[in-house]
Every structure is written in structure tokens, then in C-alpha cells.
Image (cartoon, rainbow over all chains, first blue to last red; front, side, top):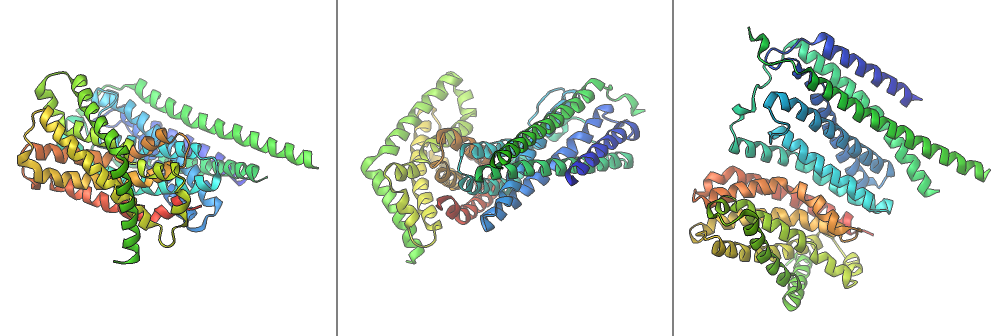
Length: 217
Length: 50
Length: 226
């Protein structure tokens, strides 16, 4: 019941986010209306990082306590993290086409997001390949910890790699210093995405709980 | 005036929002279907036991 | 020598001895490296300059591919010879086993890498003598990173169905930073620049190595368990 209320809240927040993104936020001076894609792109990557943080938390919790709830948290958060990084990559790519003139550049942020997407897709594949729940939990937890520890390493390596091979100036218009209404619109959408994430997470964990119960019975 | 530094490209904006709507909506339906399946299976099992 | 170090040493010694007697992995890996060299040549064509420009990338691609085949062997052998139980029953800290297996993998990879580098030098006409020292530093740091995660994931996937699929799928994305850093550093080194030019890459590699090693040592017992 509480989950349903959360769902409605998330839906309303998303509508408010849309209204703010298209009604309230002004047309950005340098990039024009294409910049409105940022109200999707930025909140979804922030949500994805939240998800991967929860994967790490759930993984450590599972290894420390062997409580199934931790494993369900990690598994559910990983699935959502992959969903949100997927949305980040596709919206970033759609933004890149008119802005950079190409669907894909090996831009530092796009590249490290893509690497995260691959790491956690591997995590989900591993979960699919181990049938025994207890072993699946342990293995997945180790991959979850390695993946999370790897995030800063990926971040720096990709950043330096980009700086080495191409000056960042050709990457086209960098967003100008963020104006207050744009910041507000980003904030509203970020809250909406976080609510959506929490709603999805609650439902996904509930499904995992039912699944575990079905196995136990 | 830097007003027209870039053309509008509304098509890309709608494509991005449309994609996000499909992705999140699709995932939401996927979750709803799975939880409905699991709940009905559980109910069926309990019904059989009773 | 402490009991911990002794246990790690025994695992390493046992693996090296088995490998020295059977030469199962090494023979296949040498042949595989030679094949790779030919394939790269065919894929890129006879243009020597193009090959040399792509050399650092090809070299590390070769190491990673050899690692995908070779790193899992130390655990597959345990499983095939029904020795897995023995590993599980070893008393004391399980991370000593990880350390031993990691060192065995490190030695195996180093031998393969040395041969592969030599072959590259001969086939692609690269003068390696002048840069041998700096190149060894890059190879060392990169191989530690590759083996640290590779050994951990190999132990995991040895027990999973479709291991030959899952091992690369898990290992490759995690190794992206190692690949970026080693390829960039190798490029600098082969370009004849001093090692200091690659200092930031080497620091990143060293940091990554430490992170991977610590995680491997801490989490290995959860993989071997049960």
C-alpha cells in the first residue's frame, strides 16, 4: 500500500519535472532547446550512481551477515542501475548528435558511463548463471564490491585518456555557468528520478522476496 | 545576440523524452507483470494447500 | 617464514611444478601468442607504419586475450583433478591460497608476455633493447592488475556453468582502466620518452593494483567457501 502511494508520488513528481523542464526553465542560450535533454540525462546518471552505491552496500551487508535481504537489495539496485545508465547513455547520445554532430564520441563521461553499464550488465549475467541462491549471493557480492571500487579508477583513467588524445575544446559548447532556473529544473527532476528509483526499488525487492519465498516453499 | 547559436532540434528533445518514457514505462510494466504472476502463483499454492 | 607465507608459497610452488612437468598451459599459450601475431598482421595489412602505431594496443590486447585463456587454468586444474575439496579444507586464512594462485598466474603471464614482446620485436621490427627497463615497469604493474582481478574472477567462474563466456564478460569491463593506462604508458615508453612522462599512468596503475589486491585478499574466502 505504501509502495502504491510512493508510485503515485513519483508519477506526480515526474509530471512536475516535465512541466518545469519545458514550462519553467528557459531556452538555454548556447545550446538552445536541446539542452532540455539534460533534465533527463543528469538526474538519471545521479540515480544510477545511487543505485551502484546501494549495490555496494547490499554486497558488503550480504557478505557480513548472509542476510538474504541484503542480497535482494544488491540485485534489485544493480538491475535499476543498469536501467538508469542505459537511459543516461541513450539520452546523452541523442543530445550529442545535434551538439557534437555525432551519435557517439569517446567523451570522458559517456565512456565511463558505458564502462559502468558493461560492468553491471556482467553482474546481472553472473546472477543469471548461478542457480544456487546462497552461492549466487556470495559471487555477486564480490563482483559488486569490485565494480564499485573500480568506479573512481575508471573515472580517472578515462578522463586522462581523453585529455591525452583530444583537446576538450572540440567537444563543442560546454554548458555555460548554470543559471538559477536551470538549476531549479535539474533539482526538481533529480528529486522526481530519485522517487521513481525508490518506487522501482521497493517493487523489485518485493518481487525478489516473493521469488525467494517460492524457492523456499 | 547569441539567441540563435544553435537551431532548435525539437525532434531530438522529443526522441530523448520518448525513449525515457518507453524505457521506464516498459520496466514498470515488466515489474507489474512479474509481481502479478508471482502473487497469483503463491495464491494458487496456498489455495491448493487449504 | 610465517605460516601464512608458507601456505601461499606451497600453492605457488605446487602450481609451478605441475606446469613445469605438464607444460599444458604454457605450450598452448605460446602457440596462441604466435597465432595472435599472425592474425594482427593479416587484420591490419602489411603497412609497417600502421602496425607500429597500433603496436602498444595490439601488445596489450594480446596479453589480455592470453590472460582470458590462461588465468583460469590454475583453478580449472584443481576442479578437473578433484582437488577443490582439498583447497576448501585447507586450514587457516584462505587468502593465502589467493596469494599463491595470484603469484602462479603472475609468473605464467610474465613468461607469456616476455615471449610475446620478443616475438613482436622480431616480427614488427621494433627496437626493444633501449626501452627494456621502462617497458618492464609497465608490464609489471599491468600484469599485477590483470592477474589480481583475473585470479579472483577465475576462482568464481570455475564453479559456474558457461564459464568460458562469463569470465571474459566479467573481467574485460573491469580491466578497462588497466588497459587504458598500460597502453598509454607503453606508447610513451616505446616512443623513447623517459618513464617520468608516464608517471601519472603508472601511479594510477599502482593505485589500481593495490585496490584490486586488497579486495582480492579480503573477498577470496567468500568465493572459496562452501
